[in-house]
Image (cartoon, rainbow, N blue to C red; front, side, top):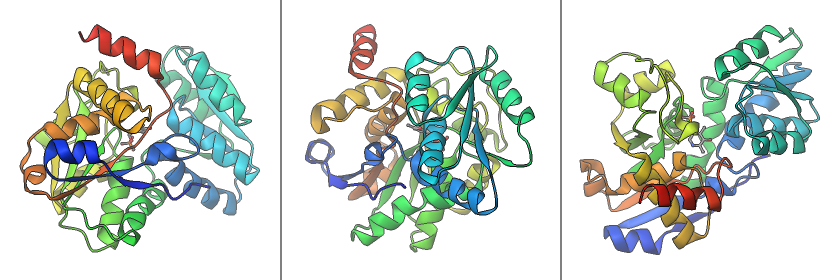
Length: 304
Ligand SMILES: *Cc1c(COP(=O)(O)O)cnc(C)c1O
């Protein structure tokens, strides 16, 4: 249900950094983000266990991936989203044949309603805190290993930490426990950076970044314990830098991604030690369908 994505050596980024930068093009997944991997895997397992319906409360890339997996598996899907969800997002989810229910003013309200309306015949799909998701996400690292690339560092974005936990699992099962991970967030969505600094899970009061796909107010516990077992370096970039990362991908590789993904491109310039020391950098181009060229141009112009 998810596809093997291209692994491209970016000439533009490699030249600029004076090292090899490899792009794992998760933006090419059928649903436009890596979420297709873990969510398809989790949905297949829940169907096997007898789920008659999948329920999600994400109006973003996770909800879209659940809708897609449900269509492919022949299982009905209900996605509960708050009133703030864009018409475009509702349209995309509806196009996958899912039932879109609008409820509540905030995501918390929609999520509570979704959970309360679940029966024992439903499977609720969490957007990041589920070991089945991590198992599915890990396949992207298996593909890199099969392609014959051994990275010296892996750069990826962190929202709730599902992608990170998946990459950690993939790196471990390919014998790469020591390969440093660069965990990237934007200012105002930096729940992982703050939690690492505090040594415990810190909950953000609000998300103030435009990188809404990174907007988990608290990360999953597993992403924090992973940092005790293996090298993880946290990097926080500004929204402006994240948008510049999107524009660079657009200009150099002709792909449109969310600032959630542009943040990882921007982090290449952070100058953190594991990146300075690396010869081959693997960048997870996590993708995201929540933006378009016009929006990127507007953000870019606003940033001056
Ligand atoms: C979900 C998502 C993220 C963050 O992933 P987590 O598993 O929540 O850490 C980053 N970028 C995009 C495009 C996403 O859809």
